[in-house]
Image (cartoon, rainbow over all chains, first blue to last red; front, side, top):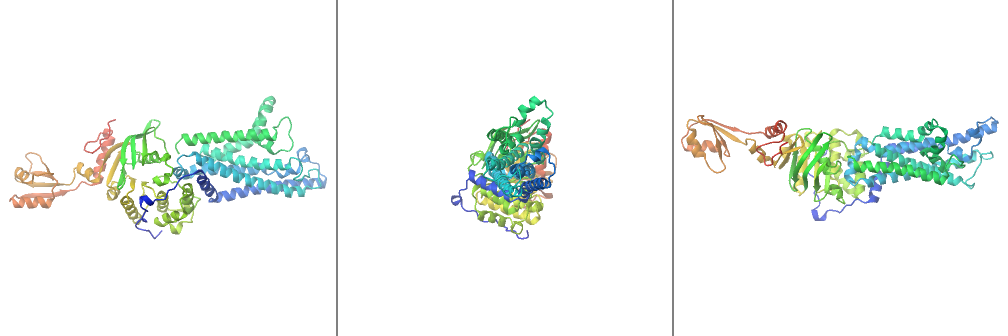
Length: 280
Length: 312
């Protein structure tokens, strides 16, 4: 700070000024750099991956040890498969990825960075699309790598038991890809909620509420209502994307994906509306 | 070039900016003055599209800011409020903005050097002092090599060396043919750099004038002379551009447009004895205070300035 250039560097003459231009790919490039230049990104993505792999492996190890010790298992656990065991961490990883999604957008409002961002891209919407795309893809990749790694190790752990499965079994790859896609979309929903609410606390609350609390509250409704509403809730529709077995009370993987995509689009539409209509 | 037409911003009942009309021209430093809460920051936010006007419009270099294909090249802005993520390094803060426009890394390094941030470029901006934060904001404003530079209270938090640096920077930018628009609530600071002044109070335009005119209208530089024969002195001093006032029956005259030295010489030449010869300089601060006090008391009706505030 002690050295100060007392006169500004001579600016190039008007005629030789470089021609800069804002383009979609450049906004994406900027958001990519923004994401990776913060420590919180690395920490939260690391946590997501850790939750995904560690909890999946712990679940598999537990299953294996109970099987071999001949303990009586609760029915849920007894019906477990290598896929369901290795996806045990999804619930926790979705929190980490969703929260990071909220931080990606709402964090700009709480720090004031949004003013710099919108001064550079005053058309605004490209920022939302770029943020959602960049973070969605990152969450998708992290989630997909996580579930595949977990499955490969977990299926080794439970091989020889009733839960044993391999990648070549029907539905396994689809289920694992579905889980990765689900985590990617949770990231996008988090980013959309952050942009919609412009507050980290509010964004995280709504995200956790929608994904984890609402399904519990639904059980308070009359059961005839439950059956009609429950499958379409974000969390339940999302789970249909990666569940191996489906019954009358759940959606098919495709329907689950469509419903979950619908929720994502809804959140993004709300975020886009607020971004364009209200002062930054 | 910034042009505001009937620019208005209301927040519910409160009118922050009230039908502002002004033009900021290239090649000079234009000061944007007003007491705190006069609507300066809101106006600047509207110029770069962060806030939408309730009515009226403001255009930059012929278009609304958002309609430019390379906005950072049109206007580089330093806003009063912090606009930096504290977790990102200074270099990365600038780089992520540069990416949106395809501005090369070379330019990022250039503005870091220009603002003297080399030694802290890789440190997290959250740990910066007020002065360093201000420099980072100015670096970001200059990043796109903008035709218009707009700085909201740039000297806030800067040490004397930094203040001097800002002054030189603003003058150099204007000399380079750029439009320079700088806000401040300190008249004295503005008087040192600005050629043109846009003065607002309670969201209204109070004056759109030059520093020189403002002083002249506020009473200007006058000389008080006392003599036994004021009528005769009046006669011999009279001339084009010279204004003489004085109460009848009083020995005192107020002379504007002539120096004390010239008056003394002229009086001696004609053998008139002077009892008093005092130069009175109206400070810009006084002129400014008077102007803004009027705005509060009479709600925008100000006399004696080039552009009159509209009556409420």
